[in-house]
Amino acid sequence: MYSSQSDRSSLKKKVFDFAHKTGLIRVGRGLWAKSLTVVNYHRIDDPDKEDFFSFKPNVSATPEDFDLQMDYLAKWFNVVSLKQVVQWLNGQNDLPPYAALITFDDGYLDNYAAAYPILSRHKFPALIFLATEHIGTDTPFYWDMAAYCFYHTEKDHLAFPDGKVEHWSNREQLDAVSKHWIEFMKTLPQAEKQGHVQHLPEALGVSVPRGFFQKLMMNWDQVRELQKGGIEFGAHTMRHPILTRISLDEVRNEIEGSKFRIEKELGEPVLGFAYPNGQLADLNDKIEKIVADSGIHTAFTLLNGPSLLGEVKQNPYAIRRIFISHRHSLPEYAALLNPINRYRSS
Image 1 (cartoon, rainbow, N blue to C red):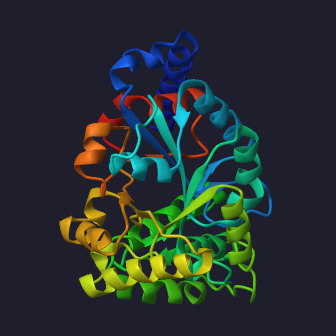
Image 2 (image 1 turned 45 degrees about the vertical axis):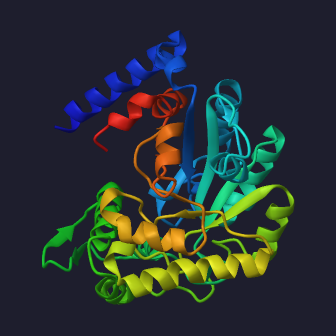
């Protein structure tokens, strides 16, 4: 079975390589000149370095690959700011053909240390959505804390909340169980998830050093420095709950609290919001209305993109974004930015 999966992956890579080299990946491109392509990054780092103890799937690209991806955007797209998008929505300007918006979620320190210098060289604006209760703190996201615990445990099994026990005997299997546990947490109500997260270090026999995560996220001084350099900031809740797993009063508090903190720190209105996890099950009409009622002009999902401009204007509170992974080669990156990506099942 593994061999079959490996063969399919190798064939897929060859197809993307061929399509990228020959230009087939951009067939029909002219039909999508009036579109908005929003790329979504989380972290810019090397997940394979020895001291990387946080959640590897959250790494979108190494600095080297990110630079190549920015070269690709510079060649084939016109990168715009969120302010330009909002002005267009308000009828104040036109967007250029093949408009693209670069976004980051959460507020990791490597956005400041690794991504920003590359964005500056390309003279690109970008938009970072902040989970405000994690900025400048030693409070990790649960997936980073879980990754640390799994990496450092000496145990070889863990009982999941549903009673199923998962085992591992090597690093590859442990990483797979870790990812499965983190994904399982997303299915639980927020309060129940928090209980399992708090219990995980004990369950795996791991003690997390005090202050270990202190430099995982940006602090507010770094956020302000990026703001002066042309980077925009949007709201991403305060504590990053999946919004359909909490009450509407809690949803309103998370959205308005995040918006208020950013505006207080930066002195500028928040124009955009990103839904945590961002899939269809993670938002609905009531949540979209809360975002709109808060005074935020746009909101972003993680549904496969890009979007026609007519779609964006029809509902600016469910704009598609393209999730980027460090596993994506440059030809795969080019394929993700193609409109056919909208029709992928995952």
